[in-house]
Length: 169
Image 1 (tube, rainbow, N blue to C red):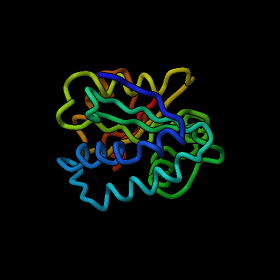
Image 2: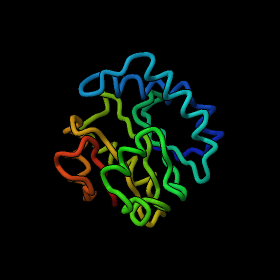
Image 3: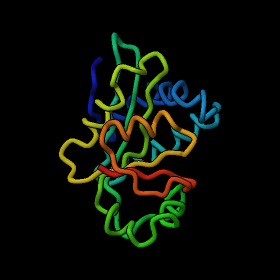
Image 4: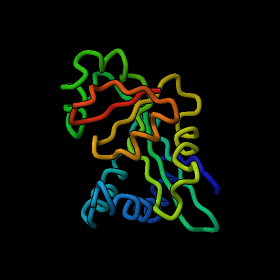
């Protein structure tokens, strides 16, 4: 499996591949994303590539896209909107000390045909390479993802009953 670290312009040039991975990775349980979810990802990607410190990873084998990751450093003050408000509601002022300045893994997706081969961990390692701290979030229903992050040594910051799951490394 080949992994490439991409800059913002390189990620934009590969948008079709990234959207294809997103669509296949999130079409099943527990996400059940539809075509609108993939279109929303493409729209977010167009804006996210302009964030300071943006990086992406694209994984593939023999020209077949298999996985992706996107990340950037969380800016101060801690952002609002998207899932940020839920993170702040759960962690309170701890977000400033624990998450601001840390590399925020925004998307991590592995196509079903490439799962179970350690690809998600390799993508995270390449995305987080050189970062003093990283963080990510997922949904409580994403039990496979939660198990993976725990297996990889990520530390859960949120309570077990929280409606959002935040991990740091």
